[in-house]
Length: 463
Image (tube, rainbow, N blue to C red; front, side, top):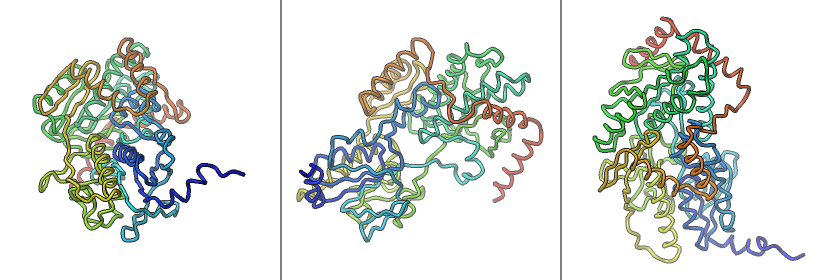
């Protein structure tokens, strides 16, 4: 029997340098794409089987897009690259001295070069156990689907609720965190209620929905110019979003949020206030920044380990002595491409490698239909033009032709009809879940809930 191409090529592939990439996000995918053209073996490890376009995750949460519109199987991206192997798994340890990493199931992978691009996780700033179960995060597809379910169930429960006060609590939503994700989430939530769901209910009145955006600092969108942050605040106000600045969250439970001494009773609390590095950063046993990110050299390598690189959200690449590059998708993409070129250069005998230099192409955030802010080094835009550019750029960077077409068609349909088609409640028996939401909200009124929140907040402050 004649040997297959894979069997014939296996000895030759085994002789090639082995590059392991941890993480199938923007950094890892871009690194793998560049290196796939080299004479190397690549193993890409991720605990999910898909690459996720995180900038549009909030649109899945707000029923504007389906999960498959913003995600694509990692294997599909590399189906034509025989030197790229994709493994579904989670890294539990990295043995730097032995050039080997350990997967959660015990499998070990040796490497010649290692690229760590494991992203970030939600940061509740020390309140993971108490706040995490009640303040929904938005980092993964499962998070977005869960938020969509909770938001739609709140309206369904309000439709069956005879008590106007309880209905109002069911239709009160608190978004914590005034960065781009929080601003986009609050704007999309207000539009979902007032423009999409407004004709779908008879007892519940979606136009009476209360959306509250809470930010601890004195302005929204840190990093943007002050005038753009002010414009975003005004645009949110036009959509009916209440913005609370310089307001600290004191406690969160199943009944609502205690902020600035005031109890906000709400059925749904959404958390977009911060991220922290993954657990993988802690097991490396290398110097970390105050925020827990891995400190890297000018070529993104770990100090003392020139064959190991950390990029993206988990890396602390200092522009100067104190200021690191932000955890943005463009940073991860550029670092992934840069590190891949560094490795390729070394494999081909070159040693002179220029330091990584980030090219800042600007920032943007959408605030709803026809509303956005955009900032580059030379340009500041507000409103419809910024929104159009936001659409074009996000379509351009989506991976997969099918995803680009699907998102474009969905956006056109939503814009023309206000009928977002992904309003599906999935993940179990909807009536039972609706009863759970309603029960928690009905029990949330009165002095008992407020006293419990205030007592826990006082205890936390005392510690």
